[in-house]
Image 1 (cartoon, rainbow, N blue to C red):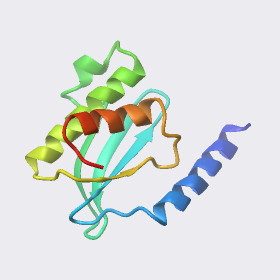
Image 2: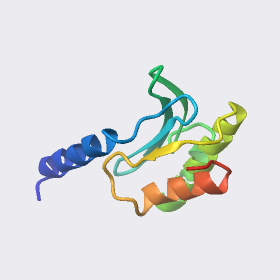
Image 3: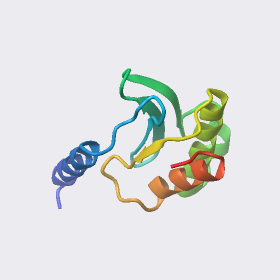
Image 4: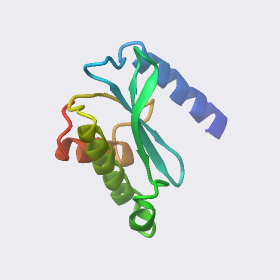
Length: 121
C-alpha cells in the first residue's frame, strides 16, 4: 500500500475515534503521535483548547537516555515523564487517544508507562 493511502486511512480512523473521545477539564485527553524515529505525547484540555503537558523523545530531559535504546524503551520513558509532569500539575485522570494508530508497540508502551507512573485511564 502507498504511504499516502496509509496516512489517509489513519486520519479516517483518527476522526472516528475523535467523535467519541474528548478531553474535559476533569479528564483531559492524552494523545500520542509516532513517527518513524520519535514518539510524542501531549495532554490536552479540549474545553479550553490548551495543552497541559507534553513529552517526546526529543525532550531535553530524555535526549541522553532515549538515544541508543530501542524505540519501545524510549516510549516507556516518554510515558513516565509525561505522567510525572501531569502529577506536578495535579492531574491524575486522563482519557487515552491513540490518534488512529494501533494499540500495540510504542503506543501501548506510552500508555502502560503512564499507568505505572500513577495516571488513571
